[in-house]
Image (cartoon, rainbow, N blue to C red; front, side):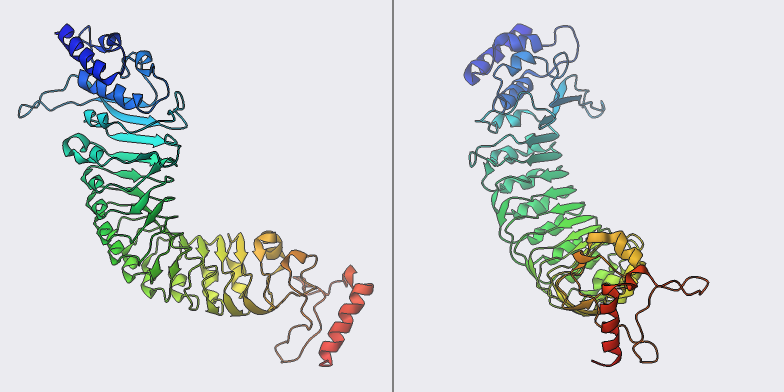
Length: 477
């Protein structure tokens, strides 16, 4: 029986030009132990022969599931339950193929390509190829790989990343991978539209098509991905509006649509994504107003809408997002004052409101945010005295940016040697509760109320100029 199998494999290998007869003879189960089906072993040799640079890989690993393993391959036994005629399968089957930085020897060859023999691996659950196709426009995803439902139904993870040579379109037949849980085709050179058939992948949990050249609209069928927790379509050329159907993705925790050409408004249905932690819509063409219903996103921690022509005031619903850690509203054409509710968002670490048309004074309540480590208010129309304490300004250092606000000034007695702020000293001291302009405070009062000694800066040329400024203010000059 064994010799008959070897002869049959020899004929197959002669046609494929793959490897020597003794390789498969060695791989045969010779002592009642666990082995591989000959057709599946041949398929594995052909798949890796089309990818790897070492032509003698099969000779070095004649039994890749047992005695001569390779890090990039994982095998498992598929056990039946013995019921309804389903007997236990005595063979090992390839369930994972992985080529990446952690499995770098042997590397992929320059002429690496997909082999149709992937269809000979019916138990394959995971296929991941990192940096394998490097020569531009040499490889595409063959539709035939996903056309045979019986052969591809076991695939749960398809990760093909960082392949500049992988171009062409995403085949429509990818919708037949009914057990797929992870689909990551990031950092390739893919073109064309996102096929609507992706919406048929009902078990999909992660969809990452970022850093490609995809165009067209986001298909409304994407709302069928009820199990999806991560959606990343960033850094493409997608157009049109965010489909209303995203509101059906109620398991979603991350949605990144940044760096596209998406227009229109954020759909109200997005408020249903109540498990969402990250929402990144930055660098698009979205307009306002943003729906107030987004206040329902109570789990949201990262809200990034930078560089969109929103053109409204800062939305009040932000005050309800108590878990927010990072807020990015730079370059959104926002106007009006900065709301005081930011002081109640105690989890904030980063606020970016730069490059807008915000006016009025900077609310002192921003200083009450305990973990705030970066505050960018530059390039607005803010005015008045910056009322932050010396301790707050010192803690943030250059991570506090208030540049290019022409009406903004700082108290020269409270803040000294802060040239990086690029804000001039206020020409006149503040007006007190009686409506009169008082002298600049020399130093803050002590806890006991005792008057402190005049600080050393008050003696000399610098103090004289400050006194003159104060006198001119009191005289109304």
